[in-house]
Length: 419
Image (cartoon, rainbow, N blue to C red; front, side):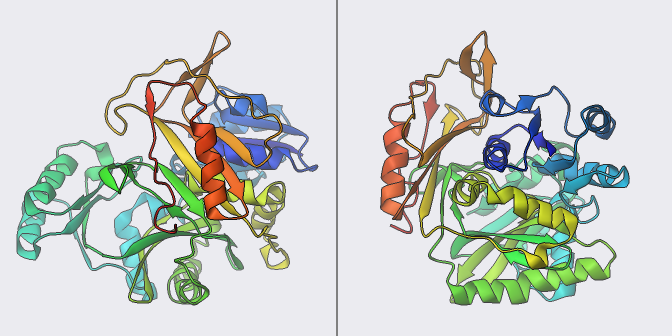
């Protein structure tokens, strides 16, 4: 098969790495890709949100299967355009992708499906939103309704911070994403990521993972797109998984089907666990990153078969074989992230020959005249597997310590909750 992956981050590098190992994969393309992806796929300079450019490339290169990595092309309807043109595609429709593209849509979906989630209110103007915050008090959560690249959520531990977040949203800090705001009850507990493959009818939960959103050790500092993760997450017990599937995921997927917008792809449910119950924090319409790096490292070549089963509607006949192992990803980010940061800094990577249990996935990198340089906020993800979480963690950090990049930083406590 000729396969095209849309996107250019760590998630897409992990997907490309797993897919390239499957004998069904003949030629592999990635748009736009990055320096790491270029070592295993042909990178093409196409905007993944530009349906016409994607369709033209697919036609010219006899593409058999398209895998959409990030949320922006999904929200733009690229999956719809590809399927309408006859291309086998992994990724939900624009309508179904509203579970991520609109926080308000998801809250209303949970109401209709009777799925447990935080209490909330919606606002399109600053004054009533601020009045609501003043009445409710803190801690409280402020969310820009639309896609804000992981930066539109403020967990405010005091009222002034919450009021400032309202000003950010309505002053245009997040563009159109902040035109509407969802204010939520603060949920205390432990957060975990659950990924569920679905072809619109059948459901297949994948391994659990726990992300580390805060920039610094001890869960301190600003929220980021993710500074590391580990899988599986022991906090998601079989009983909690069953409750999350039966009370949250299944009813919401059924509600989407009933509305004529079945969700086919991977549904990422961020869950808050407290007092033996799971509640939904948010949905994403794609694999999380860095969690995708863990999942692909543990799944390997069978990932392509699973993605194809989703796209072909045959997921009910498919199973996933998990090794009895653990995986850890440590993210290396540019100093200053998630704020302003420098680009173009040289990076030296260690030789990993003879170390099959560890991969360095590229997120924000570029090749400039043969030299690897930084080209984003989150730049690299070191992913390692081991028989135990401690072994995987130790291996990951041993490789992190060998990376020569003075301009980067990383957390030193990934996996601390489980350990």
